[in-house]
Amino acid sequence: MRTKITFRCAECKEENYIGTRNKSKQPERMKIQKFCPKCNKMTEHNEKR
Image (cartoon, rainbow, N blue to C red; front, side, top):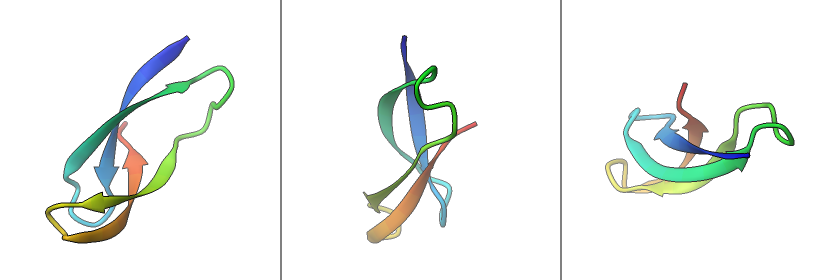
């Protein structure tokens, strides 16, 4: 079953993106490179706890 997750910027802690993942096939937390409008640059976004 796919669940909704929120991605948070690692630098400014702003919640910018929402995505989905299959928890049974990918048990670890996701990390992605995305554009942060507050930082105005590409930063690593981590899955919110």
